[in-house]
Structure formats: C-alpha cells, structure tokens
Length: 403
Image (cartoon, rainbow, N blue to C red; front, side, top):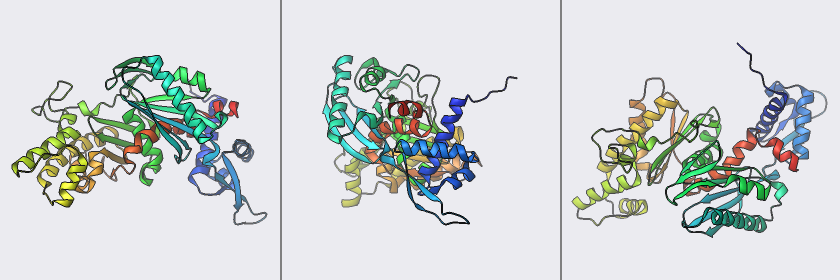
C-alpha cells in the first residue's frame, strides 16, 4: 500500500494554522510554550511567529514569568490584522457586513435588489454594494481576507455555482469568479443553513467554539441542518447533503411541500408549529397568531397555556435530535429558529426525548443549546466562510502574496 505524505507546502500551512490558532485561543502565550504545546522545532516556531507579526496578525504584549533566564515575551492575536466581508443575498435585499477575524462588525448596510434581475444585474449589484462597504468602513483591499456569500438554495461546491435558488428562481448563477476577479480576493459561496452552522462554530457559545463536532438544526420556513465534523463543515459529494427536513419521522404524518408525508419539516417547521398553536387557540376562542413574537406575547402577557402544544412539538424535535446524535455523534447540538426564540418552553423536553431515543453511549455528554446568535447568524456565517479557511490555513498563501 502506498504511504500518503504531506507535501512541504501543505505541512507549512498546517504548522502555520496550528501556531496561529494556539495564539488565538490563548489570551497570551510565549514562543517557548508554543514549542511545548505543538512539538514543533524552536526555529520553525520563531519563523512562523515572525511571519505572523510581519503580517499584522500577531503582536508582542508584555512579558511572562521567568523560570530561569530572561522573561519570555508574550504573544497575542490581533483580529484586526485582516478584515472579512460577509454578504447575505436575499430575493429583495443584499445585507452586508465587514468584520474582523473575531467576527466583530465594524460596518454594515443594506442594498435593495429584486428577484427578476438577470444574473449579470445581480453580480453588478453585489459588486456595487461591496465597494460601498469598503468605502464606508475605510477598509483597504490589501487588508481584506476575502468575501463570503450566503444564498438560499443549492450551491455546487465543485464549481461554486448557485444551481437553483427557490426564493429567487436563479439557476446556474456564477458569483465566485466574477467577484474574485473584480476584488482580487478569495470568494466563497454557500447556502443559508451551512453558513449559520459556521457562525455557531466561530461566534456562538463557548461550548460551540471549543468543540470540533457540532450539529446545527434550524427550524424556520424550512428545516435544515449543518454539521461540523472534525473541525470542518461536512459536505456531500457536490451539494451539502443535509436535507434533514425531508427525512421521514411519521409515515402517516401530514403532507410536506416536497410531496412526501411525515417529513421532519412538515412536523416541526415554523408553519407547522404556528398551525398547531392556532388550532389550540381556536379551541379557547382566541384569535390566531401569525408570528413567533405573538406566541411569546400571548404566553407572557395573557398567560395563555400552550403547554400541550409544546409537549407535542418537543417529541418531534427530540426525534430529529436523536437521529442527528445517532448519525454524527456530536458533542454539541444547537437549535435555531423558533425553538431558540421559545427555548424555555421546549428545550428541556426536547433534550429529554432526544437523549432517550438515541443509542446508549452515543448521547453521553451531548450538550443541547439554543442558538445565542439569532437572526445575525446568516450574515456572520457568510463571513465565517472566509474565517474558517483563514484559520485552517487555506487562505494563508493567497493572503501573504497580497500583503
């Protein structure tokens, strides 16, 4: 059997990413401690650190305790050493941000578009808005690490074309190459739920940031999932492969918009939840609600008891959670969408069902959390497409050539 080895350039990227992430995860750390923790040679660590200092990604700040000899100089990560652009492409709006490598937003803005635009008009609009964000934030192109785009629909990860976006009707839309050619930076494109998963990994709770194995489940107009496996976003051979909303959990359940019956989406989407709430309210002679905010107001202001609805929905949510535990064995599962907004009423019950229905041992130590990011997860996730590549070393050589 042929032995597989890393090429020198690949190994350099891995070592660079290892050192940068170690500095980032520690508030302050010395070169000597980096050598001890990474097992890399001292001269290699010194060379990598000096490169990172020259590129503005690492700074020297203070001195540590001496254990004999000179006190060590402490290193700290500089998140403003590069800026990242994230753009959420919606049918009628482009929402854009510029943030640093920690996800701290320094500039944002909206740009109106319409779904009937031609592909070239869409590209021109994105470029115009991106230029405006750079001007508004006073970000030089040399400091821009890249641009991440989120779009609802199927994205081909071999060609980075938007194969089909149901809300807009756009087909075979190529966004990556025209934007990369115009701005001279890496451009990444992915669908909405995938980027929300990255946002949870890089900007969510401490538990989400610390694990390399995370599942994100989103319950909105549709139901989708994203998986971080061994630190990287899990993908199928071409598309994401995470159409968990169209897995069957009840053969005799209601018809889903996909045409099948009893899909997880048909049972747990925001529409399904509001439908069950309104049936319950009708029995109490209370007017129907249209939004999750109205549901929360009914509970808090009018003291309406919706516990029977929450109990039923928690079972369906728990089955979906159990399936993801059995499939991917994650450390953390994060729920977004309506369960995160009404977490106090469903999370405990859903967790109980999910853990009890998953295989013994598979669920041990799994944390179930409500998303702490909320609606900003899409735009922060778009930026995280670039941030993830930066911290895995995939962008290092590209960015260094431009510095």
